[in-house]
Length: 146
Image (cartoon, rainbow, N blue to C red; front, side, top):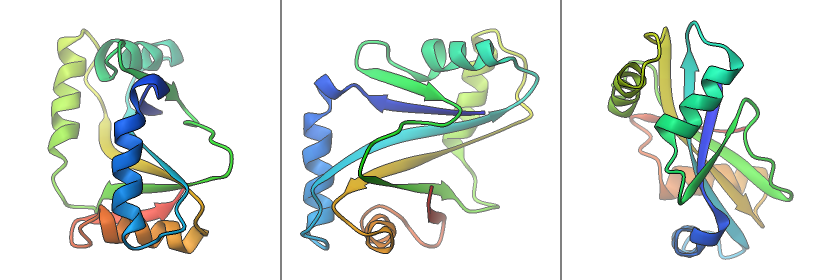
């Protein structure tokens, strides 16, 4: 199950400006941008367990919100995912797995982390290239349209 964690709109203005500034160096047509953290968790859990993970473990309830399963739906935005390539150590995933155990959840079968960038004003190929050029290290990350 996918848990997507993102900054609440009321607190996201500086994050949004920073993303737009980075992307607009290469793609001046960018209109808006947002970023989320992704946790893909597999294990012996029920849907309510994933909700509790998002709420109690992965999310700062004051400044962040989360969605489970399908993620956020943002109209007119291209969603570009960035994950570590196979064989690259995902230290954040290891920490997340330990945090889940500390919170009382059963051991995960598998967990991986990544980011999704929502970009408005660019075509699909431009949005994917923008993430590659501005945020990814091609040696360790794979980038693709969601």
